Image (cartoon, rainbow, N blue to C red; front, side):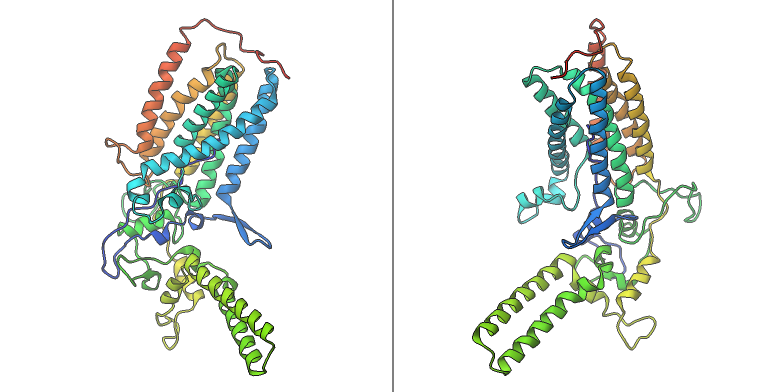
Length: 429
Protein backbone atom coordinates (compact mmCIF):
# COMPACT_ATOMS: atom_id res chain seq x y z
CA UNK A 1 0.00 0.00 0.00
CA UNK A 2 1.04 3.57 -0.09
CA UNK A 3 3.27 3.40 2.93
CA UNK A 4 3.64 7.03 3.59
CA UNK A 5 6.88 7.34 5.41
CA UNK A 6 9.72 8.66 3.39
CA UNK A 7 11.84 8.94 6.51
CA UNK A 8 12.09 12.38 8.02
CA UNK A 9 15.70 13.45 8.31
CA UNK A 10 17.29 13.25 11.71
CA UNK A 11 18.88 16.51 12.87
CA UNK A 12 22.61 16.77 13.37
CA UNK A 13 23.92 15.93 16.79
CA UNK A 14 24.29 18.75 19.28
CA UNK A 15 27.70 20.32 19.54
CA UNK A 16 29.33 21.35 22.79
CA UNK A 17 31.17 24.30 21.24
CA UNK A 18 30.47 27.47 23.21
CA UNK A 19 32.40 30.11 21.31
CA UNK A 20 30.07 32.89 20.16
CA UNK A 21 30.47 32.40 16.44
CA UNK A 22 30.91 28.64 16.56
CA UNK A 23 28.33 26.48 14.81
CA UNK A 24 26.27 24.48 17.27
CA UNK A 25 22.98 22.67 17.14
CA UNK A 26 20.07 22.84 19.53
CA UNK A 27 16.83 20.92 19.88
CA UNK A 28 14.95 24.14 19.17
CA UNK A 29 15.83 23.71 15.49
CA UNK A 30 14.27 20.27 15.28
CA UNK A 31 10.79 21.25 14.17
CA UNK A 32 10.76 19.59 10.77
CA UNK A 33 7.50 21.20 9.79
CA UNK A 34 9.31 24.50 9.37
CA UNK A 35 12.39 23.32 7.53
CA UNK A 36 12.82 23.13 3.82
CA UNK A 37 12.04 24.96 0.61
CA UNK A 38 8.28 25.36 1.03
CA UNK A 39 7.00 23.26 3.93
CA UNK A 40 3.60 24.88 4.40
CA UNK A 41 0.90 24.47 1.77
CA UNK A 42 -1.80 26.63 3.33
CA UNK A 43 -3.40 27.52 6.66
CA UNK A 44 -6.90 26.31 7.47
CA UNK A 45 -9.03 29.34 8.41
CA UNK A 46 -10.76 29.62 11.80
CA UNK A 47 -8.80 26.76 13.42
CA UNK A 48 -5.51 28.33 12.24
CA UNK A 49 -3.83 25.01 11.48
CA UNK A 50 -1.28 24.70 8.71
CA UNK A 51 -1.34 21.93 6.11
CA UNK A 52 2.18 20.91 5.16
CA UNK A 53 3.23 19.90 1.68
CA UNK A 54 4.73 16.74 3.16
CA UNK A 55 1.48 15.74 4.85
CA UNK A 56 -0.53 16.58 1.74
CA UNK A 57 1.76 14.44 -0.44
CA UNK A 58 1.40 11.53 1.98
CA UNK A 59 -2.38 11.82 1.94
CA UNK A 60 -2.53 11.98 -1.86
CA UNK A 61 -0.06 9.09 -2.11
CA UNK A 62 -2.09 6.88 0.19
CA UNK A 63 -5.50 7.61 -1.34
CA UNK A 64 -4.33 7.31 -4.94
CA UNK A 65 -2.47 4.07 -4.18
CA UNK A 66 -5.61 2.62 -2.58
CA UNK A 67 -7.63 3.58 -5.65
CA UNK A 68 -5.10 1.97 -8.01
CA UNK A 69 -4.92 -1.17 -5.87
CA UNK A 70 -8.71 -1.50 -5.93
CA UNK A 71 -8.73 -1.22 -9.73
CA UNK A 72 -5.94 -3.78 -9.95
CA UNK A 73 -7.88 -6.13 -7.68
CA UNK A 74 -11.06 -5.79 -9.74
CA UNK A 75 -9.18 -6.78 -12.88
CA UNK A 76 -8.15 -10.09 -11.31
CA UNK A 77 -11.58 -10.70 -9.78
CA UNK A 78 -10.64 -9.83 -6.20
CA UNK A 79 -13.22 -7.94 -4.16
CA UNK A 80 -12.05 -4.28 -4.06
CA UNK A 81 -13.68 -3.83 -0.65
CA UNK A 82 -11.17 -6.31 0.74
CA UNK A 83 -8.40 -4.07 -0.56
CA UNK A 84 -9.99 -1.08 1.15
CA UNK A 85 -10.06 -2.92 4.48
CA UNK A 86 -6.50 -4.12 4.12
CA UNK A 87 -5.28 -0.66 3.08
CA UNK A 88 -6.33 0.92 6.35
CA UNK A 89 -4.76 -1.93 8.29
CA UNK A 90 -1.58 -1.21 6.33
CA UNK A 91 -1.89 2.48 7.13
CA UNK A 92 -2.16 1.93 10.89
CA UNK A 93 0.60 -0.66 10.93
CA UNK A 94 2.75 1.50 8.68
CA UNK A 95 2.47 4.52 10.97
CA UNK A 96 3.28 2.40 14.02
CA UNK A 97 6.14 0.58 12.34
CA UNK A 98 7.70 3.73 10.91
CA UNK A 99 7.61 5.45 14.30
CA UNK A 100 8.82 2.40 16.21
CA UNK A 101 11.75 1.98 13.82
CA UNK A 102 12.78 5.60 14.38
CA UNK A 103 12.36 5.46 18.15
CA UNK A 104 14.47 2.31 18.46
CA UNK A 105 17.14 3.73 16.18
CA UNK A 106 17.46 7.07 17.98
CA UNK A 107 16.39 6.11 21.49
CA UNK A 108 19.61 7.06 23.26
CA UNK A 109 20.08 10.38 21.46
CA UNK A 110 16.50 11.64 21.08
CA UNK A 111 14.34 9.97 23.72
CA UNK A 112 16.30 8.56 26.67
CA UNK A 113 16.89 12.00 28.16
CA UNK A 114 13.35 13.32 27.79
CA UNK A 115 11.43 13.94 31.05
CA UNK A 116 8.24 12.40 29.62
CA UNK A 117 9.46 9.57 27.43
CA UNK A 118 6.02 8.21 26.57
CA UNK A 119 4.82 11.58 25.31
CA UNK A 120 8.04 12.04 23.33
CA UNK A 121 7.55 8.64 21.67
CA UNK A 122 3.92 9.32 20.77
CA UNK A 123 4.49 12.90 19.62
CA UNK A 124 4.98 12.72 15.86
CA UNK A 125 4.37 16.42 15.19
CA UNK A 126 8.09 16.99 14.60
CA UNK A 127 8.51 14.08 12.24
CA UNK A 128 10.58 11.05 13.08
CA UNK A 129 9.46 8.14 10.93
CA UNK A 130 11.44 5.80 8.72
CA UNK A 131 10.14 4.20 5.55
CA UNK A 132 11.56 0.75 6.16
CA UNK A 133 9.74 0.51 9.48
CA UNK A 134 6.48 1.44 7.75
CA UNK A 135 7.06 -0.99 4.88
CA UNK A 136 7.90 -3.94 7.10
CA UNK A 137 5.17 -3.14 9.62
CA UNK A 138 2.48 -2.87 6.95
CA UNK A 139 3.61 -6.01 5.11
CA UNK A 140 3.61 -8.09 8.30
CA UNK A 141 0.21 -6.74 9.38
CA UNK A 142 -1.35 -7.45 5.98
CA UNK A 143 0.14 -10.95 5.88
CA UNK A 144 -1.16 -11.71 9.39
CA UNK A 145 -4.63 -10.39 8.54
CA UNK A 146 -4.77 -12.47 5.35
CA UNK A 147 -3.61 -15.58 7.18
CA UNK A 148 -6.23 -15.15 9.92
CA UNK A 149 -8.95 -14.60 7.32
CA UNK A 150 -7.67 -17.59 5.31
CA UNK A 151 -7.16 -15.41 2.24
CA UNK A 152 -4.30 -15.70 -0.30
CA UNK A 153 -1.47 -13.74 1.33
CA UNK A 154 0.86 -13.63 -1.67
CA UNK A 155 -1.88 -12.44 -4.02
CA UNK A 156 -2.86 -9.54 -1.80
CA UNK A 157 0.75 -8.50 -1.24
CA UNK A 158 1.24 -8.52 -5.01
CA UNK A 159 -1.79 -6.26 -5.45
CA UNK A 160 -0.52 -3.80 -2.85
CA UNK A 161 3.20 -3.77 -3.71
CA UNK A 162 3.17 -1.26 -6.63
CA UNK A 163 1.19 1.16 -4.46
CA UNK A 164 3.89 1.07 -1.78
CA UNK A 165 6.39 2.49 -4.25
CA UNK A 166 3.87 4.96 -5.65
CA UNK A 167 3.16 6.32 -2.17
CA UNK A 168 6.87 6.36 -1.38
CA UNK A 169 7.55 8.45 -4.49
CA UNK A 170 4.99 11.08 -3.50
CA UNK A 171 6.31 11.02 0.06
CA UNK A 172 9.81 11.81 -1.20
CA UNK A 173 8.47 14.78 -3.12
CA UNK A 174 7.01 15.96 0.18
CA UNK A 175 10.41 15.44 1.76
CA UNK A 176 11.98 17.72 -0.84
CA UNK A 177 9.62 20.57 0.03
CA UNK A 178 10.03 19.80 3.73
CA UNK A 179 13.81 19.93 3.46
CA UNK A 180 14.43 16.57 5.14
CA UNK A 181 16.27 13.50 3.80
CA UNK A 182 18.70 15.82 2.03
CA UNK A 183 21.68 14.78 -0.06
CA UNK A 184 25.42 15.12 0.28
CA UNK A 185 27.37 18.14 -0.89
CA UNK A 186 27.39 18.62 -4.65
CA UNK A 187 30.33 20.97 -5.20
CA UNK A 188 32.72 21.53 -8.06
CA UNK A 189 36.40 20.90 -7.58
CA UNK A 190 37.01 24.33 -6.05
CA UNK A 191 34.84 26.91 -4.35
CA UNK A 192 31.13 26.69 -3.57
CA UNK A 193 29.87 26.38 -7.15
CA UNK A 194 27.47 23.45 -7.73
CA UNK A 195 28.89 20.47 -9.55
CA UNK A 196 25.63 19.84 -11.43
CA UNK A 197 23.02 22.39 -12.51
CA UNK A 198 20.27 20.54 -10.63
CA UNK A 199 22.00 20.83 -7.24
CA UNK A 200 19.87 22.70 -4.69
CA UNK A 201 20.62 25.10 -1.85
CA UNK A 202 18.15 24.89 1.01
CA UNK A 203 17.20 28.05 2.91
CA UNK A 204 18.09 29.32 6.36
CA UNK A 205 17.02 26.98 9.16
CA UNK A 206 16.62 23.93 6.95
CA UNK A 207 18.20 20.67 8.04
CA UNK A 208 20.90 20.99 5.36
CA UNK A 209 21.69 24.58 6.35
CA UNK A 210 21.86 23.75 10.06
CA UNK A 211 24.21 20.85 9.35
CA UNK A 212 26.47 23.09 7.27
CA UNK A 213 26.55 25.64 10.09
CA UNK A 214 27.16 22.95 12.71
CA UNK A 215 30.10 21.60 10.73
CA UNK A 216 31.55 25.10 10.13
CA UNK A 217 30.97 25.10 6.38
CA UNK A 218 28.84 28.28 6.33
CA UNK A 219 28.58 31.38 8.48
CA UNK A 220 25.48 33.08 9.87
CA UNK A 221 25.00 36.72 11.01
CA UNK A 222 25.48 37.10 14.75
CA UNK A 223 21.90 38.35 15.16
CA UNK A 224 20.59 34.92 14.21
CA UNK A 225 22.74 32.97 16.68
CA UNK A 226 21.17 32.58 20.11
CA UNK A 227 23.97 32.59 22.68
CA UNK A 228 21.99 32.97 25.89
CA UNK A 229 23.06 29.53 27.03
CA UNK A 230 25.40 26.69 26.19
CA UNK A 231 25.55 25.54 23.49
CA UNK A 232 24.57 28.34 21.12
CA UNK A 233 21.96 27.62 18.47
CA UNK A 234 20.24 29.24 15.51
CA UNK A 235 17.06 31.25 15.79
CA UNK A 236 14.32 28.97 14.50
CA UNK A 237 13.04 29.72 11.01
CA UNK A 238 9.49 29.05 12.23
CA UNK A 239 9.85 31.71 14.93
CA UNK A 240 11.37 34.20 12.54
CA UNK A 241 8.59 33.78 9.99
CA UNK A 242 5.65 33.95 12.39
CA UNK A 243 2.93 36.40 11.34
CA UNK A 244 3.10 39.64 13.30
CA UNK A 245 -0.38 39.05 14.70
CA UNK A 246 0.84 35.85 16.36
CA UNK A 247 3.79 37.69 17.87
CA UNK A 248 2.01 40.84 18.99
CA UNK A 249 -1.61 39.65 19.25
CA UNK A 250 -1.41 37.91 22.66
CA UNK A 251 0.47 40.84 24.22
CA UNK A 252 -2.07 43.35 22.90
CA UNK A 253 -4.92 41.20 24.20
CA UNK A 254 -3.38 41.21 27.69
CA UNK A 255 -2.87 44.97 27.56
CA UNK A 256 -6.48 45.54 26.50
CA UNK A 257 -7.81 43.37 29.33
CA UNK A 258 -5.53 45.06 31.87
CA UNK A 259 -6.83 48.46 30.79
CA UNK A 260 -10.45 47.28 30.87
CA UNK A 261 -9.97 45.78 34.33
CA UNK A 262 -8.32 48.97 35.63
CA UNK A 263 -11.15 51.07 34.22
CA UNK A 264 -13.78 48.80 35.79
CA UNK A 265 -12.12 49.07 39.20
CA UNK A 266 -11.66 52.84 38.87
CA UNK A 267 -15.34 53.37 38.12
CA UNK A 268 -16.55 50.96 40.80
CA UNK A 269 -17.73 48.40 38.26
CA UNK A 270 -19.98 45.57 39.29
CA UNK A 271 -18.32 42.70 41.09
CA UNK A 272 -19.44 40.30 38.36
CA UNK A 273 -17.82 42.45 35.66
CA UNK A 274 -14.55 42.71 37.59
CA UNK A 275 -14.55 38.98 38.25
CA UNK A 276 -15.18 38.18 34.59
CA UNK A 277 -12.41 40.54 33.42
CA UNK A 278 -10.00 39.06 35.98
CA UNK A 279 -10.70 35.55 34.72
CA UNK A 280 -10.26 36.64 31.09
CA UNK A 281 -6.99 38.37 31.95
CA UNK A 282 -5.66 35.28 33.71
CA UNK A 283 -6.57 33.09 30.73
CA UNK A 284 -5.01 35.59 28.30
CA UNK A 285 -1.75 35.64 30.26
CA UNK A 286 -1.63 31.86 30.33
CA UNK A 287 -2.25 31.75 26.57
CA UNK A 288 0.45 34.37 26.03
CA UNK A 289 2.97 32.38 28.05
CA UNK A 290 2.05 29.14 26.28
CA UNK A 291 2.51 30.87 22.92
CA UNK A 292 5.87 32.24 23.97
CA UNK A 293 7.07 28.76 24.88
CA UNK A 294 5.58 27.12 21.79
CA UNK A 295 7.02 29.63 19.33
CA UNK A 296 10.28 30.40 21.20
CA UNK A 297 9.48 34.11 21.28
CA UNK A 298 12.14 34.71 23.94
CA UNK A 299 14.72 33.83 21.29
CA UNK A 300 13.21 36.33 18.87
CA UNK A 301 13.26 39.08 21.48
CA UNK A 302 16.86 38.24 22.32
CA UNK A 303 17.85 38.48 18.64
CA UNK A 304 16.19 41.89 18.44
CA UNK A 305 18.42 43.30 21.19
CA UNK A 306 21.24 43.73 18.65
CA UNK A 307 21.66 47.30 17.38
CA UNK A 308 20.17 47.72 13.93
CA UNK A 309 22.69 47.71 11.09
CA UNK A 310 20.63 50.44 9.44
CA UNK A 311 20.28 52.68 12.47
CA UNK A 312 22.35 51.69 15.53
CA UNK A 313 20.21 53.95 17.69
CA UNK A 314 17.40 51.39 17.67
CA UNK A 315 17.21 47.62 18.02
CA UNK A 316 17.03 45.24 15.09
CA UNK A 317 13.53 44.80 13.69
CA UNK A 318 11.94 41.51 12.73
CA UNK A 319 11.94 42.47 9.06
CA UNK A 320 15.70 43.12 9.27
CA UNK A 321 16.25 39.71 10.87
CA UNK A 322 14.26 38.15 8.04
CA UNK A 323 16.37 39.90 5.42
CA UNK A 324 19.52 38.63 7.11
CA UNK A 325 18.14 35.09 7.07
CA UNK A 326 17.23 35.36 3.39
CA UNK A 327 20.92 35.73 2.63
CA UNK A 328 21.77 32.43 4.35
CA UNK A 329 21.54 29.15 2.47
CA UNK A 330 23.10 25.73 2.59
CA UNK A 331 25.87 24.72 0.25
CA UNK A 332 24.69 22.98 -2.95
CA UNK A 333 23.52 19.42 -2.25
CA UNK A 334 22.18 16.56 -4.32
CA UNK A 335 18.35 16.62 -4.55
CA UNK A 336 18.36 13.03 -3.38
CA UNK A 337 14.65 13.22 -2.56
CA UNK A 338 13.94 13.73 -6.27
CA UNK A 339 16.32 10.92 -7.23
CA UNK A 340 14.45 8.66 -4.82
CA UNK A 341 11.04 9.74 -6.13
CA UNK A 342 12.04 9.00 -9.72
CA UNK A 343 13.45 5.61 -8.73
CA UNK A 344 10.30 4.72 -6.79
CA UNK A 345 8.03 5.78 -9.67
CA UNK A 346 9.99 3.63 -12.11
CA UNK A 347 9.87 0.68 -9.74
CA UNK A 348 6.13 1.17 -9.21
CA UNK A 349 5.52 1.11 -12.96
CA UNK A 350 7.69 -1.98 -13.40
CA UNK A 351 5.93 -3.86 -10.62
CA UNK A 352 2.54 -2.91 -12.06
CA UNK A 353 3.56 -4.36 -15.43
CA UNK A 354 4.92 -7.53 -13.84
CA UNK A 355 1.68 -8.01 -11.92
CA UNK A 356 -0.27 -8.80 -15.07
CA UNK A 357 2.43 -11.08 -16.51
CA UNK A 358 3.34 -13.11 -13.44
CA UNK A 359 2.71 -16.86 -13.25
CA UNK A 360 3.25 -17.16 -9.53
CA UNK A 361 1.59 -15.23 -6.71
CA UNK A 362 4.26 -13.48 -4.65
CA UNK A 363 6.50 -12.55 -7.57
CA UNK A 364 5.69 -8.84 -7.34
CA UNK A 365 6.29 -8.49 -3.60
CA UNK A 366 9.44 -10.61 -4.00
CA UNK A 367 10.80 -8.32 -6.70
CA UNK A 368 10.02 -5.32 -4.51
CA UNK A 369 12.01 -6.89 -1.66
CA UNK A 370 14.99 -7.38 -3.99
CA UNK A 371 14.95 -4.24 -6.14
CA UNK A 372 14.07 -1.52 -3.64
CA UNK A 373 16.98 -2.34 -1.29
CA UNK A 374 19.41 -1.89 -4.20
CA UNK A 375 18.14 1.60 -4.93
CA UNK A 376 18.05 2.43 -1.22
CA UNK A 377 21.68 1.41 -0.65
CA UNK A 378 22.72 3.65 -3.55
CA UNK A 379 20.54 6.48 -2.26
CA UNK A 380 22.11 6.30 1.20
CA UNK A 381 25.53 6.71 -0.39
CA UNK A 382 24.64 10.25 -1.47
CA UNK A 383 22.53 11.22 1.54
CA UNK A 384 24.04 13.35 4.28
CA UNK A 385 21.52 13.14 7.12
CA UNK A 386 21.82 9.52 8.25
CA UNK A 387 24.73 8.46 10.48
CA UNK A 388 26.79 5.38 9.68
CA UNK A 389 26.10 3.81 13.06
CA UNK A 390 25.34 0.19 12.16
CA UNK A 391 28.49 -1.89 11.45
CA UNK A 392 29.82 0.98 9.34
CA UNK A 393 26.57 1.39 7.41
CA UNK A 394 23.50 3.53 7.86
CA UNK A 395 20.61 1.70 9.48
CA UNK A 396 18.73 1.83 6.16
CA UNK A 397 21.64 0.23 4.30
CA UNK A 398 21.88 -2.51 6.90
CA UNK A 399 18.15 -3.26 6.76
CA UNK A 400 18.28 -3.08 2.95
CA UNK A 401 20.85 -5.85 2.86
CA UNK A 402 18.74 -8.00 5.19
CA UNK A 403 15.58 -7.40 3.14
CA UNK A 404 17.47 -8.10 -0.10
CA UNK A 405 18.70 -11.45 1.20
CA UNK A 406 15.23 -12.30 2.48
CA UNK A 407 13.66 -11.32 -0.85
CA UNK A 408 16.20 -13.34 -2.82
CA UNK A 409 15.55 -16.41 -0.65
CA UNK A 410 11.80 -15.93 -1.07
CA UNK A 411 12.08 -15.73 -4.88
CA UNK A 412 14.30 -18.81 -4.96
CA UNK A 413 11.75 -20.72 -2.90
CA UNK A 414 8.91 -19.38 -5.04
CA UNK A 415 10.47 -20.56 -8.28
CA UNK A 416 10.94 -24.04 -6.91
CA UNK A 417 7.15 -24.26 -6.84
CA UNK A 418 5.20 -25.06 -10.02
CA UNK A 419 3.57 -22.12 -11.82
CA UNK A 420 0.02 -21.33 -10.76
CA UNK A 421 -2.92 -19.52 -12.28
CA UNK A 422 -2.31 -15.82 -11.72
CA UNK A 423 -5.81 -14.67 -12.55
CA UNK A 424 -8.89 -14.52 -10.40
CA UNK A 425 -8.76 -16.79 -7.37
CA UNK A 426 -11.02 -14.82 -5.06
CA UNK A 427 -14.45 -14.04 -6.48
CA UNK A 428 -16.22 -10.83 -5.60
CA UNK A 429 -18.64 -10.97 -2.70
